Length: 108
Length: 121
Image (cartoon, one colour):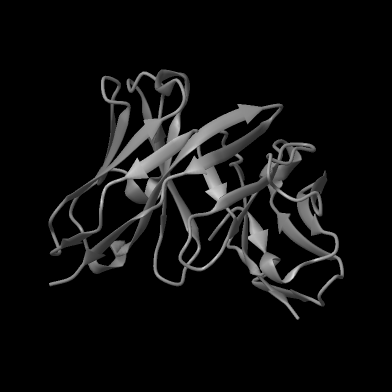
Protein backbone atom coordinates (compact mmCIF):
# COMPACT_ATOMS: atom_id res chain seq x y z
CA UNK A 1 0.00 0.00 0.00
CA UNK A 2 1.15 3.51 -0.81
CA UNK A 3 2.08 6.10 1.80
CA UNK A 4 0.24 8.63 -0.34
CA UNK A 5 -3.51 8.23 -0.83
CA UNK A 6 -5.44 9.65 -3.76
CA UNK A 7 -9.07 9.27 -4.84
CA UNK A 8 -9.10 6.80 -7.75
CA UNK A 9 -11.39 8.92 -9.92
CA UNK A 10 -12.72 12.45 -10.08
CA UNK A 11 -14.90 14.17 -12.67
CA UNK A 12 -15.45 17.81 -13.54
CA UNK A 13 -17.68 19.68 -15.97
CA UNK A 14 -15.92 21.52 -18.75
CA UNK A 15 -14.83 24.95 -17.55
CA UNK A 16 -15.41 24.21 -13.88
CA UNK A 17 -12.88 23.90 -11.06
CA UNK A 18 -11.65 20.59 -9.69
CA UNK A 19 -9.39 19.74 -6.78
CA UNK A 20 -7.36 16.54 -6.69
CA UNK A 21 -6.07 15.61 -3.26
CA UNK A 22 -3.21 13.53 -1.89
CA UNK A 23 -2.93 12.49 1.75
CA UNK A 24 0.01 11.16 3.70
CA UNK A 25 1.95 11.77 6.89
CA UNK A 26 5.09 12.59 4.92
CA UNK A 27 3.28 15.64 3.54
CA UNK A 28 3.53 17.25 6.96
CA UNK A 29 7.28 17.48 6.28
CA UNK A 30 7.66 17.55 2.52
CA UNK A 31 5.84 19.23 -0.34
CA UNK A 32 4.35 17.05 -3.05
CA UNK A 33 4.98 17.36 -6.75
CA UNK A 34 2.28 16.55 -9.29
CA UNK A 35 2.37 14.73 -12.63
CA UNK A 36 -0.10 14.48 -15.48
CA UNK A 37 -0.08 11.33 -17.58
CA UNK A 38 -2.09 10.82 -20.73
CA UNK A 39 -2.56 7.36 -22.28
CA UNK A 40 0.58 6.03 -23.89
CA UNK A 41 2.70 8.96 -22.76
CA UNK A 42 5.32 9.54 -20.10
CA UNK A 43 4.28 11.57 -17.04
CA UNK A 44 4.72 15.34 -17.20
CA UNK A 45 5.46 17.57 -14.20
CA UNK A 46 2.67 20.11 -13.70
CA UNK A 47 3.32 21.55 -10.21
CA UNK A 48 5.94 21.29 -7.47
CA UNK A 49 7.00 22.73 -4.18
CA UNK A 50 5.12 25.39 -2.29
CA UNK A 51 4.07 27.31 -5.39
CA UNK A 52 5.90 26.38 -8.58
CA UNK A 53 4.58 25.70 -12.05
CA UNK A 54 7.02 24.56 -14.77
CA UNK A 55 7.29 26.70 -17.85
CA UNK A 56 4.72 25.72 -20.44
CA UNK A 57 2.15 24.52 -17.91
CA UNK A 58 -1.05 26.61 -18.06
CA UNK A 59 -1.73 28.84 -15.08
CA UNK A 60 -5.05 27.09 -14.50
CA UNK A 61 -2.95 24.48 -12.64
CA UNK A 62 -2.14 25.40 -9.05
CA UNK A 63 -1.14 23.59 -5.90
CA UNK A 64 -1.51 23.92 -2.16
CA UNK A 65 -0.70 22.06 1.01
CA UNK A 66 -2.17 21.91 4.50
CA UNK A 67 -1.29 19.46 7.23
CA UNK A 68 -1.10 15.99 5.73
CA UNK A 69 -2.89 16.91 2.51
CA UNK A 70 -1.58 18.28 -0.76
CA UNK A 71 -3.95 19.46 -3.46
CA UNK A 72 -3.75 20.15 -7.18
CA UNK A 73 -6.45 22.51 -8.42
CA UNK A 74 -7.45 23.01 -12.03
CA UNK A 75 -9.41 26.23 -12.43
CA UNK A 76 -11.49 26.12 -15.60
CA UNK A 77 -10.81 22.53 -16.63
CA UNK A 78 -10.33 21.90 -20.34
CA UNK A 79 -10.95 18.76 -22.36
CA UNK A 80 -7.19 18.29 -22.74
CA UNK A 81 -6.81 18.08 -18.96
CA UNK A 82 -8.46 14.65 -18.96
CA UNK A 83 -5.66 12.39 -17.73
CA UNK A 84 -4.27 10.51 -14.76
CA UNK A 85 -2.69 12.64 -12.05
CA UNK A 86 -0.09 11.43 -9.56
CA UNK A 87 1.37 13.05 -6.47
CA UNK A 88 4.94 12.27 -5.39
CA UNK A 89 7.00 12.96 -2.30
CA UNK A 90 9.86 11.80 -0.20
CA UNK A 91 8.55 9.24 2.24
CA UNK A 92 8.32 9.43 6.03
CA UNK A 93 11.69 7.72 6.51
CA UNK A 94 13.36 10.35 4.36
CA UNK A 95 15.28 7.59 2.56
CA UNK A 96 12.90 6.71 -0.24
CA UNK A 97 10.35 8.35 -2.48
CA UNK A 98 6.74 7.39 -3.14
CA UNK A 99 3.90 8.02 -5.58
CA UNK A 100 0.23 8.25 -4.80
CA UNK A 101 -1.99 5.67 -6.42
CA UNK A 102 -3.17 8.15 -9.03
CA UNK A 103 -6.44 9.93 -9.80
CA UNK A 104 -8.20 9.53 -13.12
CA UNK A 105 -9.72 12.88 -14.08
CA UNK A 106 -12.69 12.88 -16.44
CA UNK A 107 -13.80 16.16 -18.01
CA UNK A 108 -17.51 15.99 -18.80
CA UNK B 1 17.06 21.09 -24.57
CA UNK B 2 17.16 18.73 -21.61
CA UNK B 3 16.35 15.25 -22.84
CA UNK B 4 16.40 11.65 -21.68
CA UNK B 5 16.37 8.97 -24.37
CA UNK B 6 15.84 5.37 -23.34
CA UNK B 7 16.66 2.11 -25.07
CA UNK B 8 14.08 0.12 -27.00
CA UNK B 9 11.52 -2.44 -25.98
CA UNK B 10 12.67 -5.81 -24.66
CA UNK B 11 11.10 -9.25 -24.51
CA UNK B 12 12.52 -11.58 -21.89
CA UNK B 13 11.82 -15.03 -20.52
CA UNK B 14 11.15 -15.62 -16.83
CA UNK B 15 14.36 -15.83 -14.86
CA UNK B 16 16.33 -13.69 -17.27
CA UNK B 17 17.73 -10.21 -16.71
CA UNK B 18 17.12 -6.96 -18.56
CA UNK B 19 19.26 -3.83 -18.76
CA UNK B 20 17.61 -0.56 -19.76
CA UNK B 21 19.65 2.50 -20.68
CA UNK B 22 18.84 6.20 -20.34
CA UNK B 23 21.03 8.67 -22.23
CA UNK B 24 20.95 12.26 -21.00
CA UNK B 25 21.68 15.41 -22.97
CA UNK B 26 21.29 19.16 -22.64
CA UNK B 27 22.53 19.52 -19.07
CA UNK B 28 25.47 18.74 -16.80
CA UNK B 29 24.93 15.03 -16.22
CA UNK B 30 27.15 14.82 -13.13
CA UNK B 31 25.12 17.47 -11.29
CA UNK B 32 21.88 15.52 -11.01
CA UNK B 33 20.53 12.36 -9.43
CA UNK B 34 18.43 10.03 -11.59
CA UNK B 35 15.39 8.03 -10.53
CA UNK B 36 13.83 4.95 -12.08
CA UNK B 37 10.08 4.41 -12.04
CA UNK B 38 7.98 1.62 -13.48
CA UNK B 39 4.36 1.26 -14.49
CA UNK B 40 2.68 -2.10 -14.98
CA UNK B 41 -0.12 -2.27 -17.55
CA UNK B 42 -3.15 -0.35 -16.30
CA UNK B 43 -1.47 0.40 -12.98
CA UNK B 44 0.06 3.40 -11.25
CA UNK B 45 3.61 4.64 -11.00
CA UNK B 46 6.02 2.73 -8.76
CA UNK B 47 9.29 4.24 -7.52
CA UNK B 48 12.21 1.83 -7.94
CA UNK B 49 15.27 3.73 -6.78
CA UNK B 50 17.86 6.35 -7.64
CA UNK B 51 21.55 6.87 -8.33
CA UNK B 52 23.67 9.80 -7.22
CA UNK B 53 25.45 12.24 -9.56
CA UNK B 54 28.83 10.51 -9.49
CA UNK B 55 27.32 7.04 -9.72
CA UNK B 56 28.94 6.00 -6.45
CA UNK B 57 25.75 5.58 -4.43
CA UNK B 58 22.34 4.05 -4.99
CA UNK B 59 19.14 3.64 -2.99
CA UNK B 60 16.60 1.03 -3.95
CA UNK B 61 12.96 0.53 -2.98
CA UNK B 62 12.35 -2.40 -0.67
CA UNK B 63 10.37 -4.22 -3.36
CA UNK B 64 13.43 -4.40 -5.62
CA UNK B 65 16.25 -4.94 -3.15
CA UNK B 66 18.51 -7.74 -4.33
CA UNK B 67 17.14 -7.75 -7.89
CA UNK B 68 17.88 -4.26 -9.21
CA UNK B 69 21.18 -2.60 -10.00
CA UNK B 70 21.49 1.00 -11.12
CA UNK B 71 24.73 2.19 -12.64
CA UNK B 72 26.06 5.29 -14.34
CA UNK B 73 28.60 5.89 -17.10
CA UNK B 74 29.62 9.52 -16.80
CA UNK B 75 31.76 9.30 -19.94
CA UNK B 76 28.65 8.79 -22.07
CA UNK B 77 26.07 10.53 -19.83
CA UNK B 78 24.13 7.31 -19.62
CA UNK B 79 22.36 5.62 -16.72
CA UNK B 80 21.47 1.96 -16.62
CA UNK B 81 18.89 -0.05 -14.71
CA UNK B 82 19.29 -3.82 -14.61
CA UNK B 83 16.57 -6.04 -13.19
CA UNK B 84 17.28 -9.71 -12.65
CA UNK B 85 15.26 -12.87 -11.99
CA UNK B 86 12.44 -11.51 -14.09
CA UNK B 87 8.91 -12.76 -13.58
CA UNK B 88 5.68 -12.03 -15.41
CA UNK B 89 4.77 -9.36 -12.84
CA UNK B 90 7.79 -7.34 -14.00
CA UNK B 91 6.09 -6.68 -17.33
CA UNK B 92 5.89 -2.90 -17.32
CA UNK B 93 7.07 0.34 -18.84
CA UNK B 94 10.26 1.49 -17.15
CA UNK B 95 11.07 5.20 -16.98
CA UNK B 96 14.12 7.19 -16.01
CA UNK B 97 13.50 10.69 -14.65
CA UNK B 98 15.88 13.43 -13.58
CA UNK B 99 15.71 14.55 -9.96
CA UNK B 100 15.57 18.14 -8.75
CA UNK B 101 14.94 19.45 -5.26
CA UNK B 102 14.61 22.57 -3.21
CA UNK B 103 12.68 23.90 -0.26
CA UNK B 104 11.64 20.50 1.09
CA UNK B 105 10.30 19.41 -2.27
CA UNK B 106 11.54 16.88 -4.82
CA UNK B 107 10.40 16.67 -8.40
CA UNK B 108 11.10 14.65 -11.53
CA UNK B 109 11.62 16.49 -14.77
CA UNK B 110 12.12 15.53 -17.51
CA UNK B 111 11.22 11.89 -17.97
CA UNK B 112 12.48 9.47 -20.56
CA UNK B 113 10.02 8.16 -23.12
CA UNK B 114 9.77 4.81 -21.35
CA UNK B 115 10.94 1.31 -22.20
CA UNK B 116 8.47 -1.56 -22.37
CA UNK B 117 9.82 -4.75 -20.86
CA UNK B 118 7.67 -7.82 -21.51
CA UNK B 119 8.31 -11.01 -19.57
CA UNK B 120 6.75 -14.12 -21.03
CA UNK B 121 7.63 -17.75 -21.53
